Image 1 (spheres, rainbow, N blue to C red):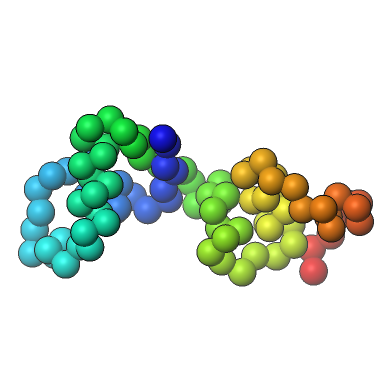
Image 2 (cartoon, rainbow, N blue to C red):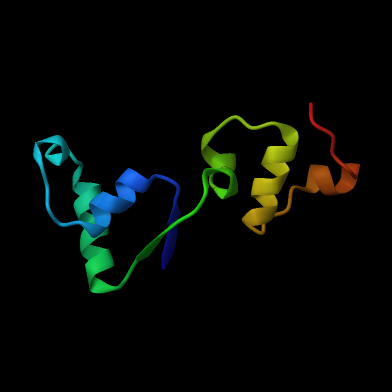
Length: 89
């Protein structure tokens, strides 16, 4: 499984097993992901913020940004397909 992440600090913590006073508050989910990366079950890669398709699920986007994210996830927005070309609102 590949997880694409746009947070370079999170990537550094996943790949660096050394913890510091600043990272002691990290949730158990982080440790779970780190263990799965070490086991080879999960691969975490960097993706530029502008190419992060999950933004459609987590952020308010304009019409064009939303349509790009939906297309990047290989989903189809039937309202957009039926309406034709999209302009920014």
